[in-house]
Each structure stands twice: as structure tokens, then as C-alpha cells.
Image (cartoon, rainbow, N blue to C red):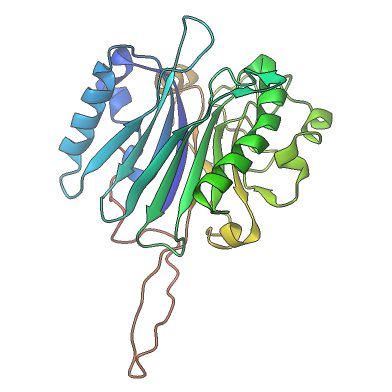
Length: 287
């Protein structure tokens, strides 16, 4: 199973109406993908995107789950989750985190919209995804508050299989190395940061920041991930202007171990770990 997060930089009608951009939004590579920074109030871009996604992928069906519009000002965003193949993963529940704790009201500009999945063909019995799109001026505070989000959803769904992913803004002027040490999901060694600090996840040539991250909780969840599969995906080759037409970040991706059984004469199952391409993944790298 492949999971990804993609900050598409103002996802809206203009973006999905551009054929070249639409063909580069690489959603078909993944079984679950979180799309960040959806700004279309009408929802037309999402309907168009889903229709085109299912038109291109005739062998399996895609569905979407959309968050509420999030933000403190008139400018608001949404996140949406695309899941491919009903036989690959079930969305069991969702939860809009309520940022109203006493003495710490409104820690997030965009409160996490959390989803609870049950995959079918992985070694995981369940999986919680917590998306992040931190604001540059409050990144440290928001990232630290994610620990409280983690505690709440772990208690809510009684699972330790929690993954935090998205645009952390956890680099450069937004969060210094010293500040990073005080962030609870970084200082707690039960959390594993799978994107290295020296990986440039932005599509700009003017910086080499590691803004986008994938963090998993616990050794058990870490053990289910394919080693070294957490990385960014360079969705396009070309000049910077061409890249920026699609997004200002590359997507970040992670593979989980798939579960297949082969029975021999003894009738005992054998685990086969499929790391790269396999029949369950679409052949196309694009839509």
C-alpha cells in the first residue's frame, strides 16, 4: 500500500482545467493520498478532478473525503483524501479536531481533519492519518500541539497506528533546529521521522528546505513500512515555471508492506514482501 501527501498550491478550477497540470497530479500512484490547500469554494474543481480520475482509471474506483473549510480569516482551505480501490482500504471514521482547549485556544490556523482506515492487504489492522499544513508564523506551536491531537485520536480509536504527514513547515526560518528539539512529537523517541532533514521537498530552486514530513508512532508501525520508501516524488522534470504551475512542493510518499500468502504442501503461509511495483498498483504514474 502506498500513502502520500501533496501540497498542490491553491488547488482550484484553474489548476484542474489545465490539461498539462491535470495529467501531472500523480494521484494514481497511491492507494491513499492527502491533497492539501484546496481553495475552491464552489467545489467544482473537486468534482471535475474526481470525474477525470475515474475516467482515466477504469479498472478501479476512486472516492473522496473532504474536510470542512479551515482557516482563521476569510481565506480558507480544505483538505481532501483520495482512496483507490474499495478492496484496498476502508474509511471507517473521521474526526475534525476541535481546537478549544482551556488556556490554549486556537493553536491551529487549520485544525487537523483526521481519518481512520482499515486496510485490506497490509500487515496493518488499522491506520490513523493526521494531516498537517502548518502556518509559517506558528509552525513551532502547531507542531507541538500535534502531540495533543495524537493523544486524543489514539484514545478515540484505541490504536497506536498513527501517521502524521503533510506540510510541517519544519525548516528554515519557520522552525530552527533548537526549536525543533522542544516539539513533543520530535523529542519523544516513540515518534519516527521518516523524511531526513537534508531532503529538499520544495519545488523551488531558491531554497532546499525540508518542509514536508512523514512521522509514524511506535516501533510496530515503523516495522510495517518498506525501508527507505519514505521520500519525495519529483512529479515533473522541467524548468521552475513549469513545476510551479503544478505545485510549490513535491509530494511525499511511503509504502507499507503488503500481505500475500502462498501455501505449500505443508499448508503453512509464507510472507512475501512486495516492495516495488506489483499488480495492485496502477501502471500509470499520472492521473
